[in-house]
Image (cartoon, rainbow, N blue to C red; front, top):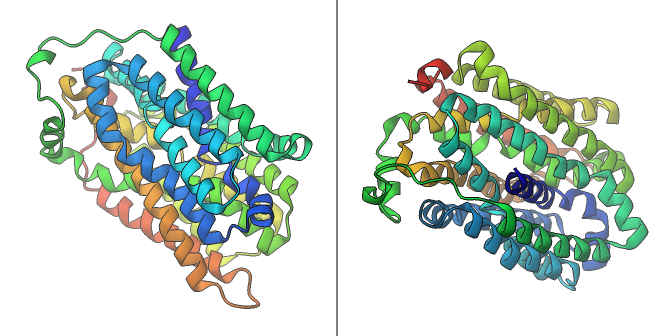
Length: 400
């Protein structure tokens, strides 16, 4: 339990690091001259390195186990990246720091899911995955109003330096307390290295699940972790404290959403339609924002909360895919799907910077954000249409 607790704390850090840039937008713009494109690239760098690392992480989980994989990468890259961020004197150093942090955080959640998949039945996987995500999403809460307050009291550099040290200590706790699960029978004869991914890509039941896995998380993370700050500042003149408060409400909704999704597949005996309903709500909320980009701070906050609640379908989608992955490819299976999830977010972070910049009109602070919300709604909506062709994986069938 102590090892899982250490992983859970690591995942809190992972969630924090992917979402805190929105709160620091004003100070990074003022002190380092970062533009919206710079911020988009920095956020995208976190997700891009995180995603690219997934294939290696999957192999290392199957071969070396989660204890060594998670502890070494979190300490070596995550801690170092946070410290580089703290001492940054130019935008490129922020980008480099975010990239290193993304690399360091890449095995944390996958290590927990790997353990759940090995030690628990498929029927329990969605609940455990969703609740772990819900606990970790507390990092989004810490990265909102509490970070804004800490940055004002101690300075953002001191806060980030302290977080870097805490990241290294968390990695040490994982190395000391985590225990690797036993390997399944026949693992020694399984596909090794990257060849296991060829076997996974040949499983056609996974194909319709991949697009929605790649895009369902993008609006929630993009708005909470990147665009809420510029949007609220440009449209409503919000300062760091006000941005932090709105971001905290959205983060709390993300925590609640992940907890709610956990038992829904058991309750309704379907994973597919739980995910369909949740993502449909996300699309509707995004369309509403696009149609009413300056509806008022209270209305915008409520719509952000709706997106946060509905955007927690990751655990259900992972469980849906996990039902079709053979046991000897557990590590590579969860990391392959996570590659698409995080990779999709990363690509959308890069793309949205260009969308907002290209569609921003002089004298109209809402124009770029209308394009942003339409872009998110279109992407998730198309992925949802593809997902409708997937085969369901009901919990009762997953036990057999």
